[in-house]
Image (cartoon, rainbow, N blue to C red; front, side, top):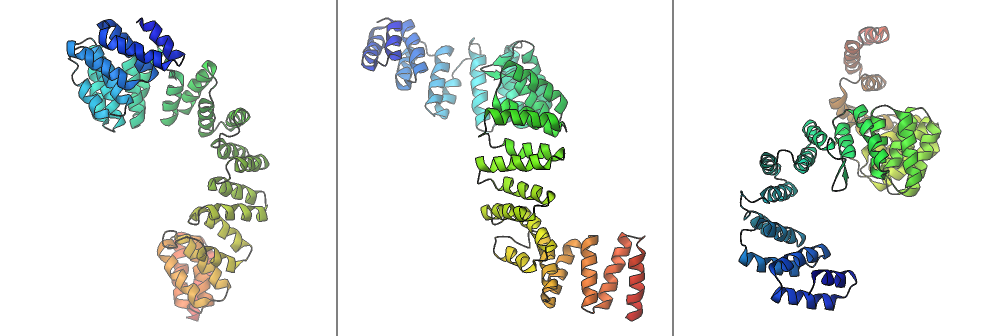
Length: 419
């Protein structure tokens, strides 16, 4: 039966007719027909039938590289990486298909994290085919995966001189990504623009906007993030960065609106609530800030950063019981975040629980003995508690940190006289 006829059966979903044709080719077809049908069956995903045809051919041509490579690809599609590798190892070094086998082996080793072996296979292929840009592209992909960005750039730039795409991948986008990752933002932006000129693609647009933000080109970042939002409002990653772009331009209302829009799209993202809370504080919307920060902590009861910002607000509002309640009612660990110990000390002091406050101050001192604000809090607390010698010692440390502070010098003199 003609291979084109079997292919038509497959395309039209006539599987019984296609199977009958396959059986005829398997038992009575020429070697060429078997190979051509194997290629078509592989394309349609009939892997067991592909394997059977190829194994039949390999009985006659056991060293044929093209057959071995297609069989290896079949095993890969079937999820049998080990047998695929064993099959590729059978390709002779003098076979014209050997470089292709090396590329497949390199890809397999890379998938399994064996980057050095993968590189060796690619470099061997490069020796055999020094002008083959596909190998340069593969090297670029490998180096980019490893974070070897300068080497990835060299490899990709060799390819882009010849072609703009490889297997649907844009070289302009690849170069934009590695230049951005290496911190060369302006160069990256040029390639992002070229990639977008070639094809408007939302991940590329996000990369352009994010790189513009990193480069300090906030207006460009805003423009591109807004363009992305219009194209795909469900692209959740854009909202936080859009808000950051607006904040850098001191457009706080717009930043808050971006966060609010992001929360509507991604209501379980604690970072959006946290950042929104901080923007609300800058807008003097303290009630809204508290609500957002509490939402962030509710999503992650161990979210220390959110608790620290909320505690700062609560202390400012003199809500000291709420400070202690926040720490007690969450998974926050004072041992992991010393600032919480300091916050507790301040709250306990104002609640007149002095012995417990002293304990917290002493514990916090281990972490903040060079922090001027802490030492000031601690020193005045010690004075209130009548611990004059200890207070004098703390203010002496402050004088070392601020030699020109006459207030502290005079205070030490008074404390010393009293003592």
